[in-house]
Image (cartoon, rainbow, N blue to C red):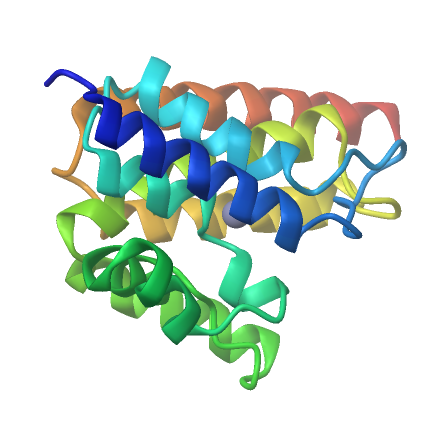
Length: 189
Ligand code: ZN
């Protein structure tokens, strides 16, 4: 699929929108990078590893944490990017009103029912998070906590299967590498 001027325009608008919304936030980690690096990495994984060219998926990926982590409302996204993108972003927005355990279980339960678009974003998001947890983990994350995250991500991905084979392979590779490195960490303890 060709990226037309109109698609470039909506893509760049969503990049500016997300950058503005996340401008005061940073990721967790030893040298916390600006938060916007995360959605940019997710969109890069979709493009490079998953060969995704659907602009709704790419825009949804850039916006995927705006409702959850900033003051952005669903109506704002609908107004700026349309109903389809709003629905995709809502699907991948976590429900922080629940306890952490309940929220994580909810994601596992809902994953198989996500739209094709949302499944691809979730998969790229998990690839990105597993990679970050190995390369620059949040402070005080023990090997056990890292392993628990990876195992939870595997359960979510069970429900996402069939949405993008290349991304699924990429996820498997990241998981294998992560588990190998966690094992090494255990040996160092
Ligand atoms: Zn994310």
